[in-house]
Length: 233
Image 1 (cartoon, helix red, strand yellow):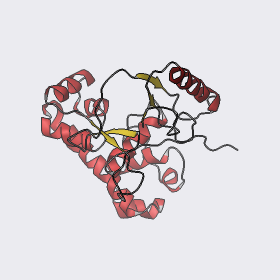
Image 2 (spheres, one colour):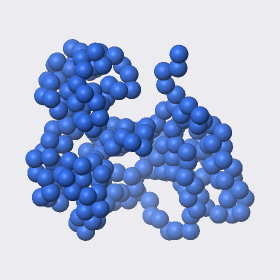
Image 3 (cartoon, rainbow, N blue to C red):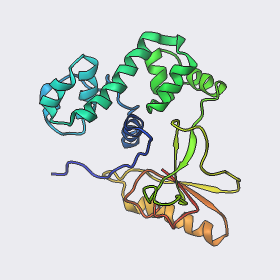
């Protein structure tokens, strides 16, 4: 029977950031590495299913040790320690509540927490978190993906946003037309929907308009490097 379909590509400058981005990409209802989505269940921990990341979050919240979770899941301790970093910071935000400082918001964003996650942990509104963040100048930077592992300076149109940076790799002159991709393949939503985005990009190119593609699905045609002028993952 079918176990899964599709994949996402999340890019960050540390594991915590990329991991939380990826979880949000999979499903609109997911806010990240959330300890309140699933209950702690040792059987679920031992089976590699789509639920297990959230059971892991619940287990870490319930003070399971990395060694205990390694024994149950066989996941490398390096990854488990990174997941524990996320849960530990979530606990700190819950303890701080609505008095979260600008520095703590900045740290949370560098670990891949969304404004919605921060709001849920501190019992304030998402708008309040976003307003404080923007007033404090905590904004993401646009970085290029280095496709040559530093062998020579990267000059690609592969881009991503991160809070783990202080400057943009590219300027934004304006005048672009944004095409939003359909994201991860799901049962009932596959390559035919991506082809709509491809057709749109091609027509805009024929009209002489520079294009930006926003998508997080590495399987698609719309995320090929030569389909658009700028590609944001």
